[in-house]
Amino acid sequence: MTTSWLSDNYIELSGALLGLAYIILSIRQNILTWPAGLLSSLLYIVVFFNAKIYAAMGLQVYYVGMSFYGWYFWLMGRKEEPAGKVPVTNLTGRQGMIISMVALPIFGLIFLLLRRFTDSPVPFMDSLISTLGIMGTWMLARKILFNWIIWIVSDLCATFLYMSRGLWPTTFLYMVYLSLAVYGYVTWKRSMSQQG
Image (cartoon, rainbow, N blue to C red; front, side, top):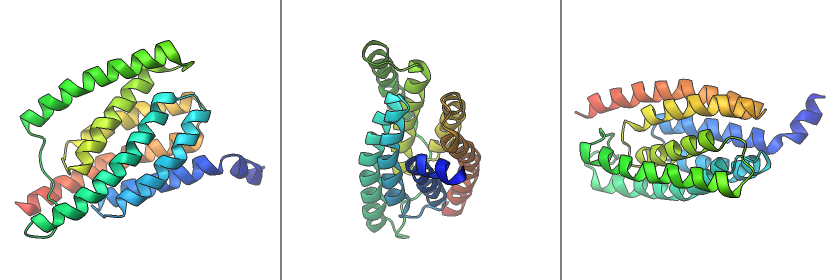
């Protein structure tokens, strides 16, 4: 029975394990964050398509692109910094305003597309989690501390969504993500105080 379950769910399980590696590496500010995230996202495109969670599937496509961007920024940003490492920063008022102005239309567009053109049973929650993921990933790539607050909210919502869809490895992954997001916030906050 266990062998059968593993063979039926190996893509989701592999994506979940790589996703776990991604979050642990990002907390440690390790450059391998980005290849792990890239591979996890590619696998989750398939998982979310099969589960009819279309915005989450589209979000994984965005994550693929952001994995390349984050990888590049973390590598190239090092050359410009005296310590050779991109520092963790706070979200500025200007960044927060721009992110809010971008997030609302993105949420509205995703929700509208899901309601009108798909058979998604969870368009609101799927749109919300996807919008938070877009914003959080950009902030992670730029090493903005507030990304962890976004992930705490997103992971909490995602845990309930994936539980409702019967995606148990993914539900477990997002429960772990939630606790690691709290830990990530504390770790990056400490890193900021050491920078200053």
